[in-house]
Image 1 (cartoon, rainbow, N blue to C red):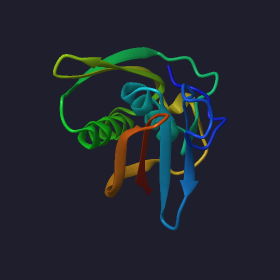
Image 2: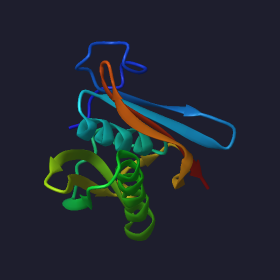
Image 3: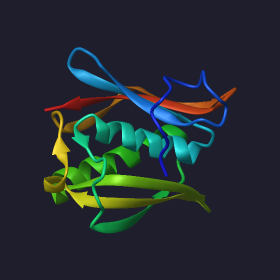
Image 4: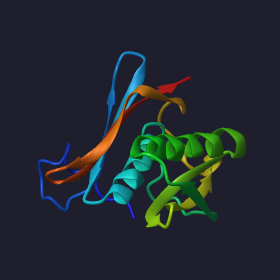
Length: 152
């Protein structure tokens, strides 16, 4: 499951994971880091959710599994975040926890979901992921990713 938010990047232990969001002019920049690509992707979801909702202590009412076909890492990040935006907009569901695992020819993701009405909103919900600043990749201490998201 997703890790803590105690650090601001990979300057801490090599096995540490975390995330943060940084407000910019008309968007938010989310950053995430973890030892593996899959955990980094899960941290990115947590960062995006924390931009608009406090899910601490919220119990999920359902679990959903999604399969993302193998693609370049940037496409996987964008597809996963777009899936979260879709569930938020179309189904009124927000993930309170997420796990991602490498699978043959893709990525398996488990989302523990709660109704948006069960969480405390702390900001405007995101509406889109900006491709221009999206990045994900391995580094000396594990994986990191970042992207900008717009809100309405």
